[in-house]
Length: 233
Ligand code: G3P
Ligand code: MG
Image 1 (cartoon, rainbow, N blue to C red):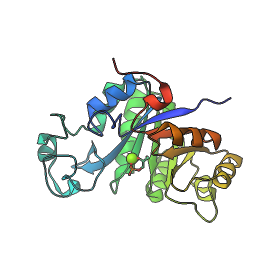
Image 2: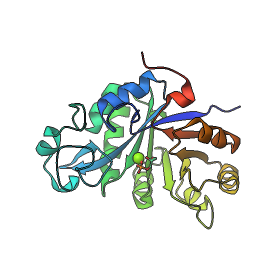
Image 3: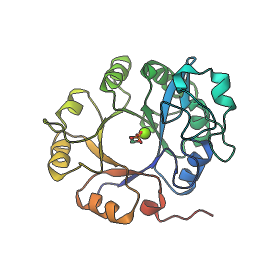
């Protein structure tokens, strides 16, 4: 049987402030196979953050893409944690898990591919340690144009009329579907096209059992321990 993969959603965000270094470290401690984080581009730097605006998770205000990097880095993202840059997340993970970079902000594909090239050519990272995903499929097409070897995951909410055909057309490795819509027909179609299926966001064991019964290949969760059964020390 194939391995069932655990993606820590925004790090172990059920335990620590989302998309922070402490959430990433806790996810690794809890045994996640992959760390999922979201990125925007600010002053050509990839910053790890989920929302378009700063208010929900920090003591800052305004749209993240309109701020200076200096201001963003001065904010408290919870428990005194800063908003990390992507480079800090990679250095912290340091081969202990895969990194799923979800492109949120416009124009993030180019910088993300450049960073992956730096880490694969100069820092001994493997392509297999990276998976780039996005709801913006144009950004994913751009990734594939820049480097067809980089694995991509196409995010969807709902079931497209042609099921996973769009993802096959994008040359994706996987499709990432939300828990509310995933069904057997979609999973079967994706698998027949050679695509993996990962489901977000699965935070309890009941939904986890349902997803395993549907034969999906893994889940995104705020609580990696529901998959790994590992405890925080
Ligand atoms: O990548 C899976 C999931 O993170 C997508 O939704 O809004 O949590 O980034 P969101
Ligand atoms: Mg995400």
